[in-house]
Amino acid sequence: MRKIIPILLILFILLCLLVAFITIPSEAARIYGPPAPWLTIIQRAQYSARLLWYDGLLTRPLNNDASERNFKIEMGQSVDSIAASLQDAALIRDAESFRDYLVYSGLDTSIQAGEYKLSAAMSAIDIAREIQDASATEATFTILPGWRMEEIAASLPTSGLAISPDEFLTAARTRRDDFDFLADADSAEGFLFPDSYILSRNTSVHELMDELLRNFSLRLTPELTHGFEQQGLTVYEAVTLASIVEREAVQDEEKPMIASVYLNRLKIGMKLDADPTIQYALGFDFANGTWWKNPLSLNDLQFDSPFNTYLYTGLPPAPISNPDLDSLQAVAFPARSQYFFFRAKCDGSGYHNFAETFEQHVANGCE
Image 1 (cartoon, rainbow, N blue to C red):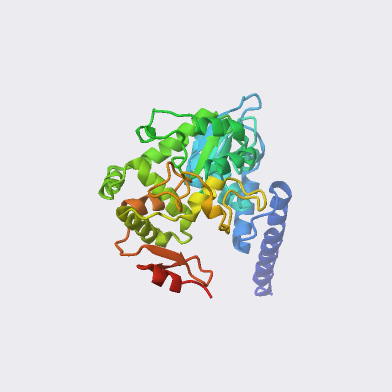
Image 2 (tube, rainbow, N blue to C red; image 1 turned 60 degrees about the vertical axis):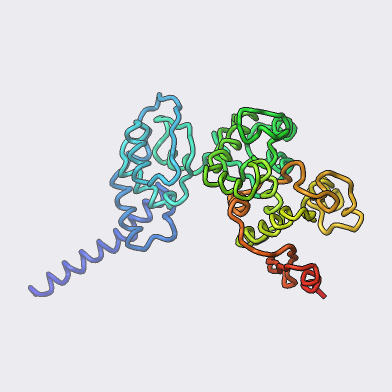
């Protein structure tokens, strides 16, 4: 009989634990929502118990009469740091409970960097959900390598910025002398650096232009400028050539070799014969809905424009797109080659065959 009592006690304790193991996660899910699907059963039970222990720390606002104020989350900031900053800013009651809720709900993996308008009149749960999306006060504006200014302008209506395409194009085409590298430029084409920008939704067109041009200026290091000089190019000429390389290259690793071909042609006074310069000159292709007509016809190759490098030797008068850093570096530090020709390989890989002579170039054609 004495042996039976401890066994019954153990069974009773195990039964209580089993009930708790089932009911605690269920009660936590009722109050705080479902747990993240990637949590283990043990983790779900642990975090569920913690959330129930915290009780009103997460569900009650710190100050019902508080007003909104700005709170910034930096790129790469840890969850622990964010929680501590929120507590220090008197926006939440307790950093540890806030962090546990983020992990329990899975919201710790989707916090977005940016500036938010938060209030102590919001519960910690409301704040956790609010910092999942910075779009209320900020917008991410992305410029892809090789876009011309019209393509950048066309992306504005869906960017979240209150800037119209016409406003942008007017600003981009307005001559400005506040950046040395624009001294020879009639527009900002070529210097609108491709990148993703986190901006206030209230950013003006002039602030946007300054941001894009400042980003370019940060990449224009003395080393890069010296590389341009070694190729006998001014910064403006180098950006112009880089804008062609950007449009020609499909694979970034080929950019230095493509740059070497064009530099070799320039050195002997040979025409560049670059298709992208004609595409730029032709403008928008309404038939295909693109700024870069492809393929070009024989008539297109005769289109009379100073940008047509099939008709005129030397560089075109201005950049034809906005190149990324890889293209700029390819011009500053090109591959060493004796190649004067290149054409796309026939396998659809995006790579090219390079040739020293025109005969070799013809032989590289697809049957």
